[in-house]
Length: 341
Image 1 (cartoon, helix red, strand yellow):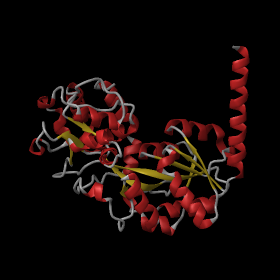
Image 2 (cartoon, one colour):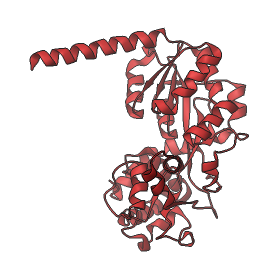
Image 3 (cartoon, helix red, strand yellow):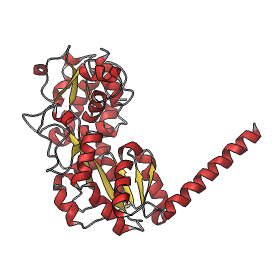
Image 4 (cartoon, one colour):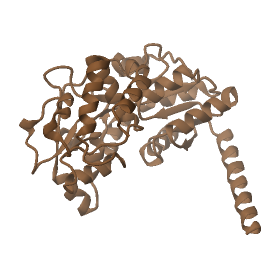
């Protein structure tokens, strides 16, 4: 047993050593919470077009943030990519990001989708509407996120846990719109309507709705788009049973978030890193995001994919994304008080 443990340790140390060698030799080093399949093809295209090598390290958002803080000025990371504005806000307040002055970024990205001090920039837009079972829910029964606290939905809602940052940001948007008392009341009613203890990811919620374990959920649209475009017949069958409803169209609009990018304070390769940031908001890159990832382009002149268009169009909540990050802790505390596990 001891011999096996030593072998595992030796392999681990070798892997760490090889990783460090690779990341030091790269021209631009990227820490990303987006999985490799969702970002590396674009990085490879950038390298092919510019000759700038890019080294990619993927991991969980919070783990990468902790790593950046621990590495401090010695961090090899030039860029940090993550999938929610709350993590970008945390990175900025932790002092690990650097402002970027770029006419390309400022022109391509509307002010709503970037930091006021230019510490982070949106790369894609991500919608979190209500997704429901077509055979058990009529769209006329739906209206606002707030209405999901109505007792008529008791035992009919599947949802991810309160640890999910997408839900935390959605609650922050409600907190801004309605205030703390009304938001807590809404959360109490919402939690009372859960069909089961929160568990799993967005795809798990969609499959649960299709399977009849609940009647509706809150999920990002690209998860449904992936099921609809899947090579697996069982995935397409799940998608065929579901429909998208855009809530709050008569008032503040549906909740949209972003995936985004920030230059690190430790960046050693700033010029090439900013060049990569600008490439990711180019029309070509934005079309890739739309067609392959099924995320909404952050650039206004690039259209959504046909799959996303099939979900209909919506008015988006124009709330400041900065505020979503700022209120993240308050929202999580309210979710805890409401018993959202």
